[in-house]
Amino acid sequence: MGDMDDLLNDLEKKMKNAVEVLKKEFQKVRTGRANPAILDNVSVDYYGTPTPINQVGNVSVPDPQMITISPWEKKMLGEIEKAIQKANLGLTPQNDGNIIRLPIPPLTEERRKEMVKQIKKIGENAKIPIRNVRRDGNDQLKKMEKNKEISQDDQKQHMQSVQDLTDKYTKVVDELMMEKEKELMEV
Image 1: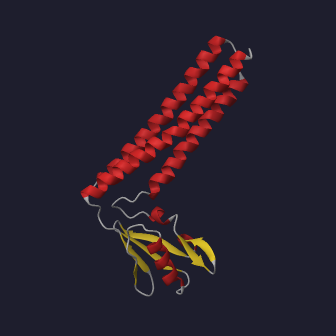
Image 2 (image 1 turned 180 degrees about the vertical axis):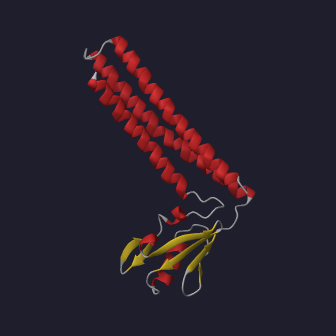
Image 3 (image 1 turned 120 degrees about the vertical axis):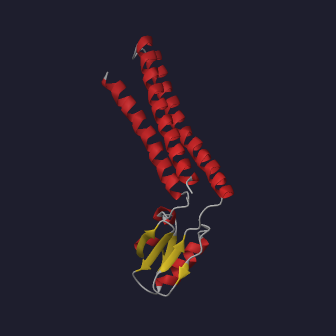
């Protein structure tokens, strides 16, 4: 029976991983609220090396509509500003010679609806690896039954466990999508 537990634990780990990837994807989606995670994929040219912004300066959120970046070296101001513009985030950096301010404009109704569609697409895409894990698990169970490693009854029982796991993580994805949608539609 240890093999079955290992199999189910392995499948659950893979499904959990798909949910973690989804959470990271959702952090990158810009809502009307300032979130430093939208800068996670922005790299600055730091002495010829592409470096994440949070490694060349202090990123903070002084209020819900503003992100500020205080570089540790003044000469990085221009590089950071260029990197943000190049990243195409739909934000206009304001450089005052000491820090860079990134005002987060409120989202228009139309933009919010577009973002909700994007969130639903990201969420549906997150369900694909979960379903693939289910398929792989069921294939393994069928093979084990065919090789007489487990009985047909055990196979059915374990396939139900795999389906229960799939339902559990699909529900988590749906909840995360609803949460993010609610956050987006908040004015």
